[in-house]
Length: 89
Image: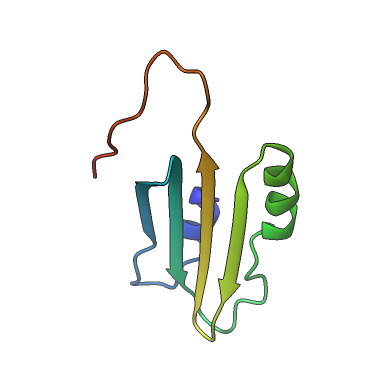
């Protein structure tokens, strides 16, 4: 997802990746602007969504006229001896 979202971003536009902790989950959000001439906007996301469901990761994506957004909600593992206390940028 990371390499594809950057690869398909419009020229002179940055892809955005945000990571944060929310309700015992790691949230990873990816956004990029794309050129409307690019016909392949979904970046294989239906396949990624199917794979994510097997690992209990929630994957949602949306497309507007010039932007693709992907959001992963990754549940924290239970019974860990160590916990994630923060994610730094």
